[in-house]
Length: 291
Image (tube, rainbow, N blue to C red; front, side):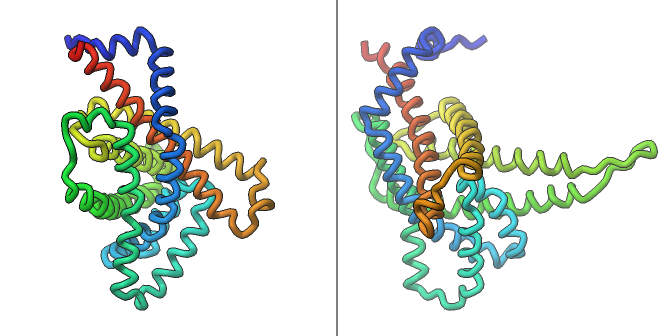
């Protein structure tokens, strides 16, 4: 039987004190300001990233099926505002023949900005790691583009699996003279597919973005926690913008940009707060050895 580490025992014995320590560290590192920077660059990155992914994958997957998958899961990232983004994506794909090398390189550059800024924000939160190691600048340059490639491959995989699950929903199960539709099962599996993809993405951010090596035992709970918090948050945002908010009256034609930026900032805050939890836990683990 594996014994808990001293750091884990401390957190379990004093959860309130540990949470207060995390909040102090988050405020000390200007977490909300960092989240705002990440959200701003994510706003610049999301459309070029999606355009590159759709244009590339449309050579291998039916564009209609690809847009259906995007429409389903883009709503997880941009609650209530996925349709305007999809309209712009469809318009761009229809006129993709006019895309030149200059525009292609420009979109490739902007699509990586969010990951570059997120790496720098993680460096602030995990600043204690810089005392022992540094990341080669070539790794920092190439890592965002590797993420862009991985996200495109993940979208391809999700599109393929989602198509099979939708086909499952159109079938019926006949047993002992009774017939049951599998539509409910298909919907549940589609939701589970999106949630698992969300957890994998967040966990990979916690493993790869900070300098140094982070074990999956620390990163996976952080990814699951951040995914659950975001699920709760996005449902609240959908309800708020659909019932109480008057943002469309105040901002008019800028409503989509404002709502998307707010959603991205809340998401970035949750991601960085999860990173702060992992950072403070690491400090607890190092303190006994240092003392």
